[in-house]
Picture 1: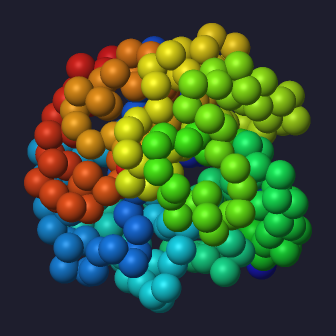
Picture 2: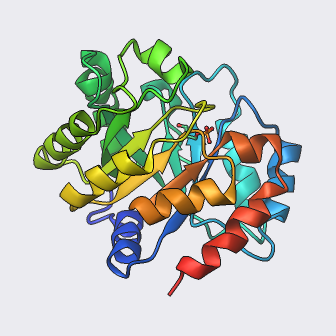
Length: 257
Ligand code: 1GP
């Protein structure tokens, strides 16, 4: 099967939101940490206000639930229209059921497998799929604890207060042609990435900036947006308290034009 031409719909939406000075919210669902019943429950919390995107994936996936989770998003009238992007840790976690994929190059690390190795194996599969591929510079920041993603990828995250390293890394990613930068403290990060680091990176960057890791409250989400995040990613907080989803989505209203 040949890939459809000019399949940039999701990325164009991200850019459009950014250009209109709006903000977007992505909810990360880790297929290991949620079952279908919880997935349906999550969709129900989207009845009044829904996130802009779902990310599905994680750095260590031990179950085969990715397709089922995407189905539960698709089967709900409240979430059926929301784009689903894969957030894979390797080429083993591709799913044709998603709309697109964050094609992550872990540019804060120096592990060739996560910079280019996995990508070489995944590329022909993606070429044949209908997934929209979004080339994304993935930058890990040390937010106070060793995270699964840092351990599994065998990379050293950027130190918490080294804003200049984060800026140079993001810039290099953009100059290499990556279309988005995702700066992440890792799932379950002890604290969120500092507003100072987000601001410093944002000032230098033209492509959309996604921020995640350790964001557990509406206040923390708003702080990331105010510092310059275009998209905020929330995982653990909603996994642990699905009812929080409604609060996060409600708070997003003020960022919509
Ligand atoms: C992890 O940024 C995401 O890659 C989400 O992090 O689970 O800490 O919200 P949390």
